[in-house]
Image 1 (tube, rainbow, N blue to C red):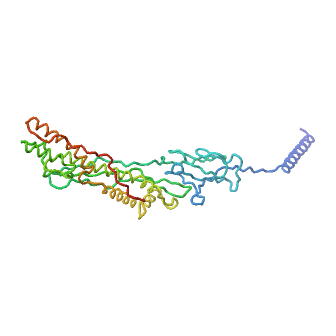
Image 2 (image 1 turned 90 degrees about the vertical axis):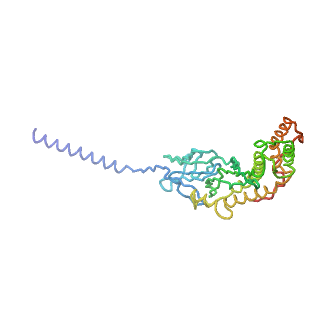
Image 3 (image 1 turned 60 degrees about the horizontal axis):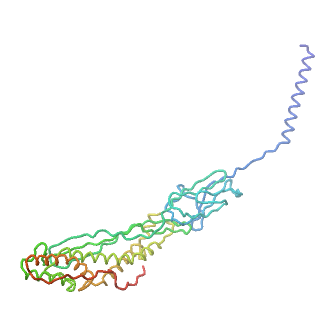
Length: 358
């Protein structure tokens, strides 16, 4: 290659490099940087006693059925305005917008979702529908004692279990009755009476005496020298039916009063709330004492004297022993009073109800 040729190549290279630099500089002068912000949901808040509060990490539990929670989507970057369809609500919510009030009308594991570029899901555990609870009556405890004295039916203290559900829009925990159980203990005393089944009459005189004494049980209002344990048990079991009738009547108003009790949601968890709902002179425990008191007061307005319903119940059972002695008399050729006594036991709670405001 000659010296002249080398010089020409160098000049061409310099020219090319100059043109490239000019082009790049020109292009740089015409370009403009554009920053694009991606809007998404940063977090979700809920309104608690008028204040927006971050939704708990695990969502919500123990929410009252048919109660509501008001949510708010916080968008990122800060100050980004909501737009049509963003944020969009789903699950138990629907529609779009920054805020959304949701009423939970279905029980079980529910959820609320909010979407705007990303999706946040909030679990919500909703309790069962609040339906009236009836008293669970247990089989009566029973003891038989071979001693003199009156037989008794003694009521047990009611056993009540509670839960609580959250009504967040109203900022309250509401008390809920899960169950209530009642019962009695019966003690029958048999001393001083001869059982005609176990120790039958051995003469006409004894047979006449047995039939006469037992037929008069209802009108006399006390067991006599001839009697059966079964008759006394029927008498006491009728007292149990009175106790059930009285308690069942006053329970409905009591349950309503119990489930109207509330404490603030924002100052307590569920366990603390239940304890607070039960305590104090107007709490659930005090109301249950008042309930038992009024039911017992009414129970004791029902007669337990001669010709009363409990003695009617005992008489109907005692008739079997009367018939037994009458048949024994026929076998032995004895003459005894005929027939039995058959009084009515209808309607255990027949007195006017006592006023009650739980």
